Image (cartoon, rainbow, N blue to C red; front, top):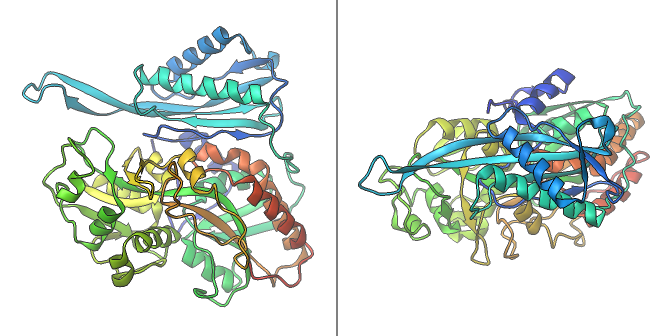
Length: 500
């Protein structure tokens, strides 16, 4: 799959041409090597009776996926499948791909007896006659599926689609489903972590918005200097750690996960990594892939006697802040020796700029390990490890496990919307999950720009949430959205801000 995420120093300009290219190449959603999915409801689905199944792109397996879904829906008798969109209440459309991820020998002494390992994804969204998203879902191979990968993916989608329609999947009201009438241009900069979803959002909103994916630290600095109207950041500003003199309101936008990606050509199964092993690899205490501490969590796996090529971010990064905060939380030695921040004094490894740069370097370096936001691993078709959570479960990042990490997230006194969901105790939670924020200055904006930002935030927190799954991000908990919408109401007339 070709790379379409802008490089860290490049402006993510939101022309319709670029967005069309992005959506064509990356599609509505990507998830690879996962076994869960998360739906996003939008409006009442209970009145749907007829459906047309569109193409799922030109990826390998797309025709088989479509045929299986049509067959399963017809057999269910819950929906009438029609041939033409004009005859349908809704259209199910999406993207997909299935590929050979490697081979393994069925008999160690025979080179001819091999079996191919397949991976892939199926991303769908349900749209009405106005092309508004009503529901979306993403699936990747079930961990222990016994049928073909195409049948497995298609069956998962049908099951969840019928469940959503049966329940009605009532979503929150959406005040911004139509294109905005605002012509005020907004300019933001910051985190590469949410850049793919921001690109989609800013174009879909119908507003004039540009965003430079330069990293959280640089974006915050530009906001402090008055060069941009808002900043994207994966690290909240706190009284203890203000990198610049800046008063902002924090608006969480989506949930994501930082995943350990790896390039092990001979490994035919998902790698399990403990928190202690991750800290050991990045501290330099664990240097080879067949180290007993790695083997202990991967019984029966063939791990090479090869040196681990460690890759980390070279720029001031919110993703690094999340990664090092997690390592500091799970490893006292890491916290003392290295600590947490947007950039640290790395004990070992090679640096690369941006999530995109780390993904590319790991992709071309055998025996490498790195960390990126989930979407970048998926885009590059990279393997990523399951990480042991506090409940002792090895969990892979996906929308369900990231959502589980935020299950207990609530407004705490004095914290506003600055909260961490790292290493949550929920047994189903992925331990390196995080919110990402839009930082809006509380002073210095014109009334017109405050109004435009309020309009943009309203759209992102309602209509935009329906699109989160389409690019591998989990939607915000409803309680959080409800509180944020109240904060947005005060933004337009805000002359003095609070310091949430």
